Length: 500
Image (spheres, rainbow, N blue to C red):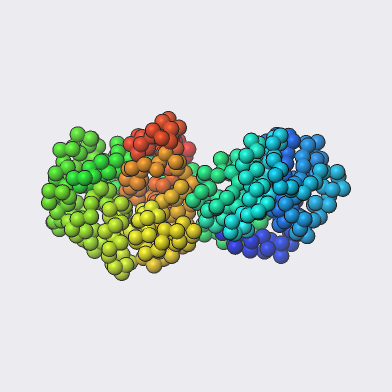
């Protein structure tokens, strides 16, 4: 696995750094490598201001200042603390000997007039809330109008959770060694316009969390053989819909069938009362009408046995409601369906009412796709607790239940409790009704021909996110709808096929 794809917790990053030093690369050398790597990634606009705190992150800033000085670029080091790490003090002394301008931070100071402002205040180890001079400096950085670069991570942002009360808003964040979860979770996308990682030779102590890239997904979408048929790529069933929510399952079908994510055959299973509304939109899919009670599904075991008898995957819950018929259907699927079952939306609400032993002992291979509130209902955890540790929370529940968890958010966490993937694809415009239904449609197709559940979930989340990004490019974050995302799925899948 490429170092650029590994994501390390703050503690694991600290341990990796320490082990690398113990194995023979001095900390001073790593600091020099970090400064050089960051220096090369920035399109410098003079003059530059480098704001430094007291730790090794500040040391990276001193290296940058010396490199800028040697390159003839005007720069100023602004120190918020007169304390330094041993290695940082060494590079500060080189700056002072070379005549780099070094000044202390003074209250009320602005950063107007600088072309580039570099944030080397805290780094990844920061916990709590920025206060006092640090809070003022962060505010001045954000008001500067300069090109803002954060080294390691935006000061004030928690490296594990991506949460902050106050933090730097950067044009570019340059991670050193490995990304941390905070580069992707919660607020990260709102405070980082762009982020890159620099490999400086730190050997990671833990590789179980990785960032999903196009290179990971493309091999699943190679051009298909001529000597194949629709059954080669799997039958799938989409089970959902009720009188109140007829659109959800149709969105899933758009992503799954009309947009050709890849399943061979799609069965659209809806209450009979929805058949007239659904049928005009169904071309490649087949409709499987289910008995209804005038509002939603009325469970009939024979119907469900027939529906699922030849399918590899089924997605359950999109607009299905929470009535007794839907609840009975979910219980039957857990006990009798032998394929991969994706549970979303109303299905997750119904699942949260069941004993976890029924989930752990399910006959099917489960993939659950909750957002934070749905995950709160499933686990009994407070939403704030989940937001502060989304990866650990998802991993713990996956280990306990045996389900693969796809935890939706600004970036998506996919885990089976052993391997964890972070999918950074997606955009603000996807915060709209129906986005999860589109994802369920994509996932039901992907899981039909990608046998590994975490692989299938990661692929679906990536395709869904990239389709959403393309829709936002066309229509903007305010005007786009989930239907626009579904209509862009074919573009993303086509590009993946061509990438092989």
